[in-house]
Image (cartoon, rainbow, N blue to C red):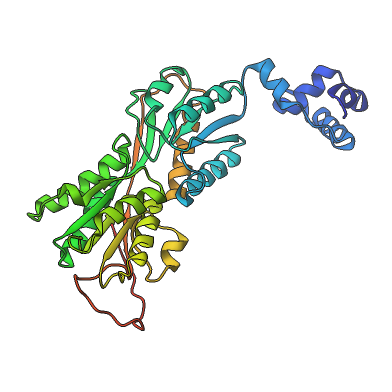
Length: 347
């Protein structure tokens, strides 16, 4: 591999000038800079970015920790962050915590060795404590909030999204409505539960404990909760489910039990995806602007670089209720040949 000394010799400049021409081109005359660039291209020179970072104690990298990279929602968040970072000349180090605080802590320890300029994190239940160990690192919490006082955040209106989804079920005539909620140590799950309960209360309906079952955001949690709730003798006529992975589990249980959607059971999920649009029947969902969430989080982080201490900024984006064919009145009977219907309601 060619070295910076080889580039300098070919361009007939000093090593220091060659280095400045490649790292700080505004400090070198245009003609000299062009000679150095031509020499670097001719030799196939690639700068050692890690060595430079260690010398300067600064990198063009940011850290990103998501909780489940196999979840399409989190994959889309990550793409939004990475696309934005790349446009601004930054490299993103991506980690997956699997909702485990211990894995999140190890990811942060690894990141510290790479001298990131900032961090974007989808929090676990341990994030608030972990961030106390990084007091000077700019941080943006994405999708959820940990309650850490120095972190900015980019989230959606979870309360409003859950409220509108539940109101949709009530307006269809449902009075027996259950919810599979997420882990109550996670802010999104708490907020979606709040929106659900608020809509029921305003309609004079009871939130039954046996129809409000927790999960941990995974498919098997949705499957387990739906199995418990959808007993033949005492099941709700409609289900609202707190995220897309748990919705998959609940839909599978409905099929295993021979329940027709929406004739026997109406379902609304939180999060949209390709499978939600292409399953039969297409799924009514509360959609989040996942890609925009990622890009906005990245933009918010970049604004913190090169500035004095900034007050935390909290950005909240709207959700959208997309009505498809998985919702209908209680005991509705629909022809399978009916044309698909789709409409939307923004918050």
